[in-house]
Length: 162
Picture 1: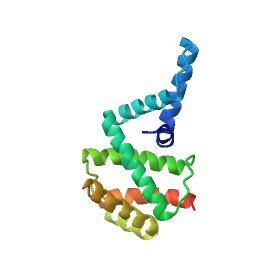
Picture 2: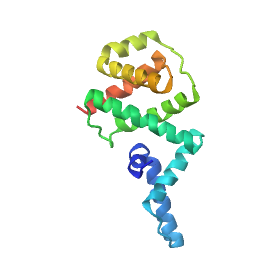
Picture 3: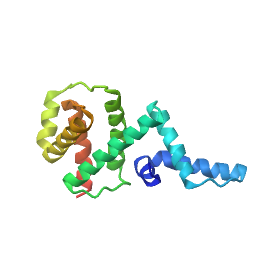
Picture 4: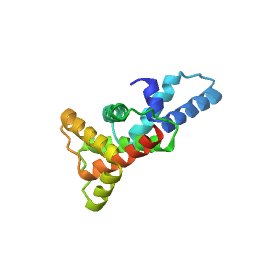
């Protein structure tokens, strides 16, 4: 995984890695390369997800695929500093982990699904495209509930990225 990917997908964790570098430099007089902040960030993510490094790499790959698919399908320019983008990335992180562990989110509220589908038609169609991709690549079917939550986050970044 490249450093810029870590910075983009895990900005808070990377910032903590940078703080750790600064503390080490100040207290020990040792200057660590910026890559070390990236490694620290990945260790923080493994702790957050209660996972091992290969799982985090898989989660990151799925996140990147979804971000690219949404970006190109809706022709977006992400504002990576925006709250909507950061929430989307956070949602994708936990979504990808659930996908990896085959944890299913049950369908709860069919009327809410219909409302989201009707009001966020472009985002819903994009979420369905993501679902098709995940089925083809990972043999993982999404529930309507998962599609709905993806659509909500996609709609938020879509509104900002126009």
